[in-house]
Image (cartoon, rainbow, N blue to C red; front, side, top):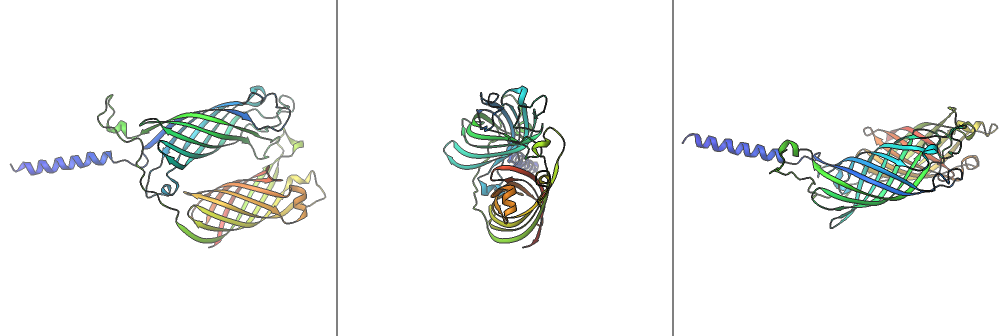
Length: 379
């Protein structure tokens, strides 16, 4: 009789341990995804018109995490999914363009839910390879791509429809862009738009550990219960930053060679954070483009500008879009009336960040890629 309380305590302990084993971890919810793409080219040149006339097709495979931590930053963004993927495309005549593939990271921001539907916005950024670049003798018709490796960018607006416990049906409209930011010429780039269809399979990585039998009696959730949704935290603070960046560019007369020129960007910028998601920026810019020497040997090759912009912040990353103009006639003469700077920024503590951006010229034409570092002076 004396053993019964001990046996009861042991049984309660084991039951608690088993229950703890089944408690979901916020990193356990994963998915595999496959998509097919089809569409048309947005091409404004002439020499590749026939090669691109039949449009394009592509396949994507993704592995990702479904966020679910109610105490993390994700609750203010309707719990986005994120991960990495692989792209393989047939974009036209492979003798001229190659058969490009890409590896990339992505994040999927939910926009709203309606019954089984969820609308999403999916940006993806990575590195493409196996494009066939311009060659003066062997591939002179290719006026779009000047390098074998290029930036891969995709933006999809679409939806997922929950079919059952594990499967989602995916569909959307997307744009895809390949270019190298004038690092090598030619750099008209490849731009494609079209539709995509796919399937997403959800699973819990702990299922095999808990019950890996052919007829499991214990099934773990493959989708998290999302119940805590918070509004962005008001911040209302400003800070002053300096930013420096460098890059490399090539002129048209040097295409097909390894000859490049250096560029410099220096910026003094004020950032005002409205809340934990949104911020505004404004600043002054110094630019130097050494590639202008060959075309304008008698002119100065530095110029000054001012910009304003918007920051969308999540985790330690910020998606930035800035628009600016030049403060003197020389800048307008050399680079057009205004420039854009789309960029992605990663914080490295409270006083330092790293940034990868693209400065444009005359509006939307690539000028150079900026590889930069920013330092906070005061807040």
